[in-house]
Image (cartoon, rainbow, N blue to C red; front, top):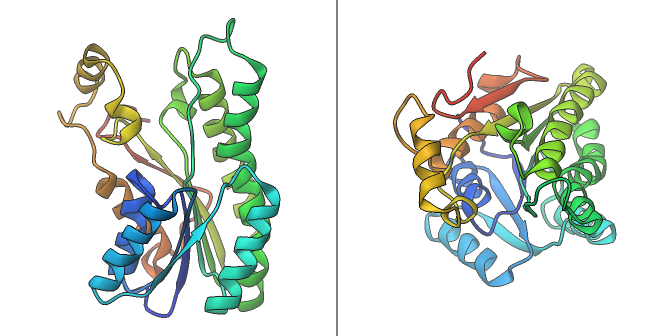
Length: 247
């Protein structure tokens, strides 16, 4: 899966799945624009890529801020000339039962997880249209497919990403631009590390493969969808969940 000559922008690249995606794409030869709020962690990602002989740059970005998205997209295109691959990965949780959920927590999750993907895509797609080649990959979630108690905001944002993926795929397919989603299941990240032990055990029992997934498992799927090998796949949701949800 050779991505040499491609420029990939990954949001939420400072940790977890985004961090793994940045490294995997760079490993395949892509130049990586790593974007997230934590500049120190971003610098570590860029350092790892550079240390392995790759090319990368860090861009401080809060995806809940529309103006920051616009300015970072311009900065990436100015520095690297284009954006070929966009990985909309940045996401947050603000869990609460719907009857107690504050409107601010609903709004912040929708803004960060869903609206940012629309804004990033809108800002990057001009570069893809110009060169008639592009890959847009949205990181959704198994809970956007099956729901989850206490996560109405998160599940709604991730389900919305699936609809957004399909709509964009139909809009730009004729320009040789694909848009797909990856739906992780129970993955070992800082987000899942914070869960109580009993919830982790229950989650593990629901996985036929018998193990918790890794960020690298998800990054491998992202790298595939970014490659030429996936050129005839669009509007698809690729499940990376160990069999936790089938069908």
